[in-house]
Image (cartoon, rainbow, N blue to C red):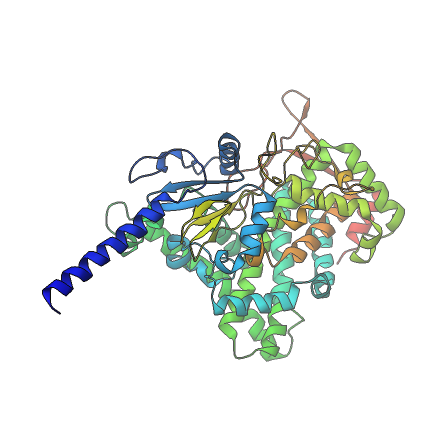
Length: 512
């Protein structure tokens, strides 16, 4: 190439680069706290032990927008603060907003990116989602597993009756046992079951390592190549531990189902039905099944435990729900799924649980695969988008806020199932509390069913009241405080749970 031509090409290239750079600089990111050069909003990022969603809600109010943003070490985070903008971006524009963040520590190094919840948006993910939807993605499909849920709910009642002091442990065991039965046809015998313990450990690891603020390796992925002995590379050892745990959680029950199929003794389950239909896709099926387990076990525990708190804090609501159960079910048997169409108040109770105790306050993170301009705001390619599902506001800035917005939920901090009944019901939280677009939770009906059967049986046979302080002799009033984490649990507290009467105790003990 001649020298004049080469110079011309170089100058043209520089002009193009400068033009693109200048254009991108002129684009207006959604408002947020002012940052510093290079580090951006590093010092504004909420700490791990705080309710991040409250900080994000405060920014939305302070900067007057239902879209806000911050940038940390070059990574842009976009916070969506209304149902309207969640549907517009994560729903209507799902083609460019359905990817997941890279998750270097937990996903790539820790192995969690093999499951449907954290996998990249690609053909493999689409196959997994299709399998998931076909098996439990509709109320009708999910109803095939109702009998298993009823069996495990009855076991839960017996465990609570025999040991009411450790109700939270029983809820964890029951949630894990329910999903293992439905997913793998595996019958959990006791609380020391190895699969249950492994899964609980894996879920705790995931929740701790995927909520903001993130580990340094997320901002500087090259750090993952550091040797394990390097100072500060403790995250490498953590990643090895995470990978071992999640792979064990996925493989152990899957091998159990395969063994039962070979022996001809496998009961109907999510995995057995998929292996019969798609025997050539074992790896895909294994990780699709792991996704069902990891996605539902922790979340249903949070919801049912919050239900116990609601029973204590709002006794008038409890009485109303119990009276409805008695009028429909009677006192000679336990509630079942066949009763559900005739229990509108209990159904509203469940719906209110999902709103009042927002299990995933920031939903699942989305990642933009293309740059976009929405409502005049520039969204760069690679931005991480978080929907502030918990969000409460004092006034409407633009559109409707989410689960705790007083503009659409009267007295939003109060637990009130009546808000969903009558001629003018308030908005259905099921439309957004399980996420938006193609990455919304595919196990929504599974979770809904598990919470329904657990709550309805507890209401039928137990009374849940304030515990007594042994020092003062006075009642202990629980506080509904949601702990930080990707999956948020209510803060545990002392509660008093007792069987209602001898007849209820007899019903529970009839369970085999």
